[in-house]
Structures are given as structure tokens and as C-alpha cells.
Length: 75
Image (cartoon, rainbow, N blue to C red; front, side):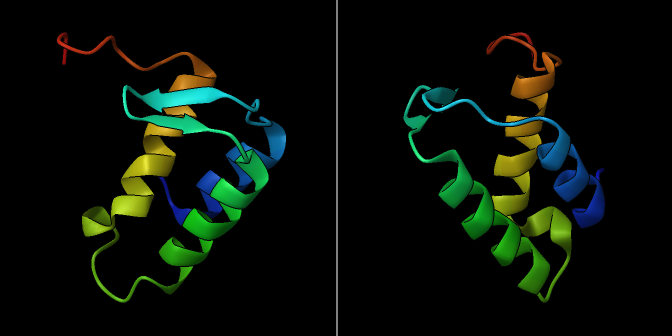
């Protein structure tokens, strides 16, 4: 599990290309806005970070950007 700081650091060092496909239903057309909104949500999340949808979206995006995400169906 990554910390909020680790996610912030990762995305600072690894820019998200416009048009990145997060999943079959989500294409990121405005990467800066997407990161800003989701990072704000996880910074302010009052409960267990593991239960935050924005946290999981950013973890999935980090896996896609770093090339470590498994293909769907092999999880």
C-alpha cells in the first residue's frame, strides 16, 4: 500500500500522458486536473485510506504508468 506522499512523488516524477486509459470506461483527458482532484480527495479522506475510491484509482494509474499492472482477467 502506497502512502499519499509516495503517490504524490510518483506522479511528480512520472507525468500522465493525455489519453491514458485507466480502464475500459475511463480515459484521462485532463491528467493534471485528474491528479489534482484525486490527490485532494485522498489528502482529506477521514477514514481508512484503503476504502477511498480515489486512492485505488491513483494506485491503478501508477501501476499503468509504471507498467506493472496485470492484464484484466489475470488478477
